Image (tube, rainbow, N blue to C red; front, top):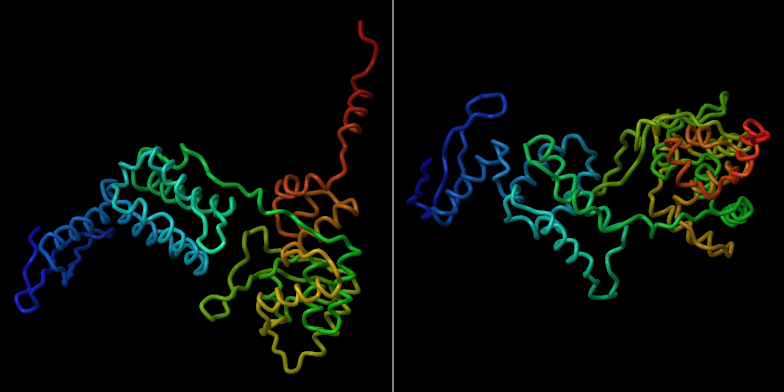
Length: 361
């Protein structure tokens, strides 16, 4: 297809028709190219993108991938994915043809990231971050395999370069949490937030999305139907993390009473207002303050959820019951908290022996 010279501007432009995914004719007009070669290259890449050909460059396919995925993801999730793609993946693979990227290319890319160290601190990327970056790379190739005819995923062949081992699961004992909560009583808003997080096992975003109508004092339940995050200076309420996350959490009598006291303190609060109109940064600051005041080992806010689970395990509840309460899969509870469950191997062997034991002939 020809490109054209814009005599007034001294630049080149592209104008042509193509059929979109609905098989409807569309006209493309793109100008401002400094050379004829640049105009032809843009036209060629556009056509390859529309056809979904694996002959396109990796950078062009990434644009296809973004368009396919953007509408299906939460705004903040997509923004995180895009940052990783634009800073850690496209600069290395962008000019290569999608179909020509090999497992050897993936290994060399991994080695580059593994050798990285921060100029100021000298620290490398964490293993969990490397795992996240590789997973995103693999997701792009999986998309190409599933929908655009790429023969195989080279990132899957190589395997991951990181792990989750450096994310340590920490938790407080019940005695430690009580010590912390006492240290927070002089700031009621923070105190009530932490009470719900610890005794309800909620995620941080689930807590911050609660509104008065989510609390049922007759049934003594908290209804989890949404989550909160702050994005580009905007408060955003979306559906929970997973389908399992939607649940009703039965809370103890004392927490019901405390929530009633808190809501009575809130002036002119509407039923649709956020029950705890604070930010995650506020909770982080309060966590550091209370931890220091109580003289405790620092943990993350999310570790209060781990603390809740460990308390339930200590009280003798099984993985399935706990998973239903905290919005997890029971298999996740089993594996992530396996070291906290009492060992039953000897008891299993004794019962098997009683069933199958006897004289051997």
